Picture 1 (spheres, rainbow, N blue to C red):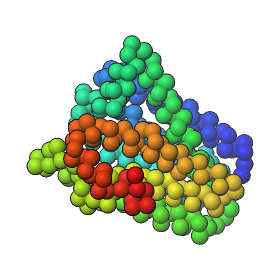
Picture 2 (picture 1 turned 180 degrees about the vertical axis):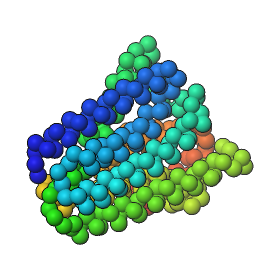
Picture 3 (picture 1 turned 90 degrees about the vertical axis):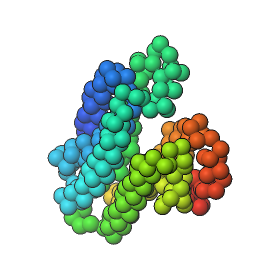
Picture 4 (picture 1 turned 180 degrees about the horizontal axis):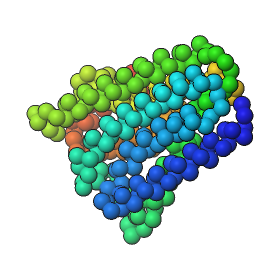
Length: 263
């Protein structure tokens, strides 16, 4: 692994992501909606992938495969979030409204720092991409093919969960109800589960490259965030506030991720 190349790519990616998030923060300040950060957090991964495609010294087919995976997944999730958020652009999501309320008079200053931290997290989580993109070995490994297959399963699963939830919410008869159909009948958060599985696939892909084991940091961080910080805890707190007893019964009946992730 060429350490000079990887350090340069990290710096370029960090500059790009921080610049994008600075612009997004200014937009969010104008419209008073910090939820737009989620859209561009997703889109920043394709930005990093394009930088790697153009500048990384690795084996071209490997770069095309890993960067193509990242661009497709990031663009899909970012666009899905954009469609949802833009519909209510002048109505801030409750979780961000609550954060803004807690921060009080210094909310915008802290929000700028939060946006920059999101940019830094993009680069930190992109470790599997950097490791793979600088690998010059002239052939693809079975681990890379396995990672690509697992990635396809995760993207299809996440897209299916998102589509099922959107269809459920679109039906006026379901207002105030908890979505428990399709994948949502097996997991309270199938979208989050497949999102985590996608990061596992990037780790598996990176294992074929020197120092690929370092890439375990990405799925580990994502799992921690989803289970303990900004993912499931905040989502379920909001569901309990809006759906009350119906969501409590759903919690008792359906596992947090899949059956072996029982809570």
